[in-house]
Image (cartoon, rainbow, N blue to C red):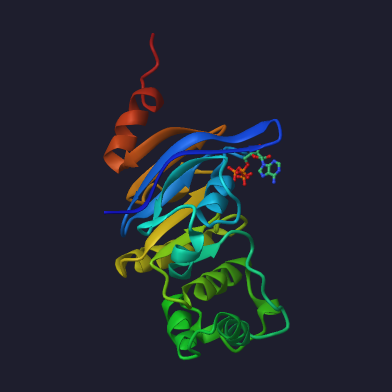
Length: 230
Ligand code: ATP
């Protein structure tokens, strides 16, 4: 079963081709890493999958619905594409309450997502006192309010200190155990390689590799671990 199954995804901005026609096959329930350096096309891929922009070419399905019908699948998708937009003077709980009102979600979900993300102890403090990691976790809590089947997280560990990164990793593992499919991007493979079960490596808008950890090790070890010749 694939949560995301797209082929030939292409996007250009004027003369610059951000994606040269990539295929993706994200297994249902996987924690999938989308890894590549600056400008490799990670955010563009996510924006196309979320229907924020239309691809120039490409087709496929997200959660079984056609890519060009995002309204059919977006109710089942939670996303964190930039730093979460939070009201700094409001508490974490009040921020989530605003989101439930906007999305028409049951307020009773608030305590559940606060527990799920480890944010319950901080819920009644103003967001202005939160660390970046706490803000990211609250952002993920917001994305979980609608009980998504697919989570799309664009570089959520950027700027986090080691403690924040470790807490976020713990959260991702616990979310994966609930069966939600997660697509998460990073500049650095080593941030995600122990965590994820499926990997997509991008470079300059092209896919270099897609597969599981065993395939990833096989694809990389001969180059990375080759002993110097004497
Ligand atoms: P980063 O890690 O820096 O976020 P990324 O892998 O997410 O990089 P993208 O943001 O998808 O990469 O960008 C891919 C390429 O497309 C880059 O060269 C970028 O400058 C370009 N690009 C992205 N969005 C636009 C836009 N709206 N207009 C023009 N060029 C864009």
